[in-house]
Image 1 (spheres, rainbow, N blue to C red):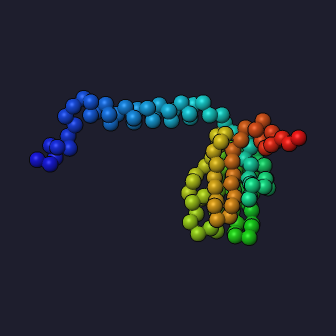
Image 2 (image 1 turned 90 degrees about the vertical axis):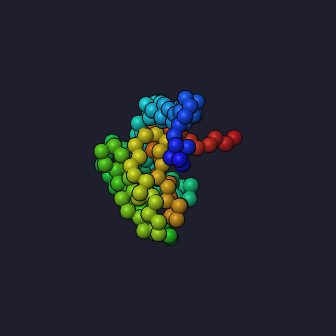
Image 3 (image 1 turned 90 degrees about the horizontal axis):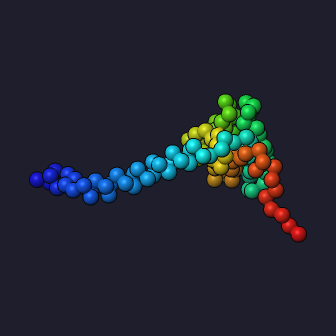
Length: 129
């Protein structure tokens, strides 16, 4: 009897389940199609830029700080954290980034790697008078 209670009995129930899922999928597709491919990975530690690396050239960047080190690799137009000696390794498990606005964050080491378009990378963070 309990199995029958879990079945969807009305079209309204089905719409209530499917409509949010379809809207989320459409939003995801829209954002993926309209996000620009990045040109530069900017690496910041404690908010200070320590490196800017182009995505169009395979490269590596190693940062050793007080809390430990991170190895960022750039291959085939994407950047990923290859290794880190932080306890949780979440930054390594985040995977590759290649689109403008995507980031890899290592909280224990206070390191953030963000993909930006070329124009964004050269723009100042703030203007003072």
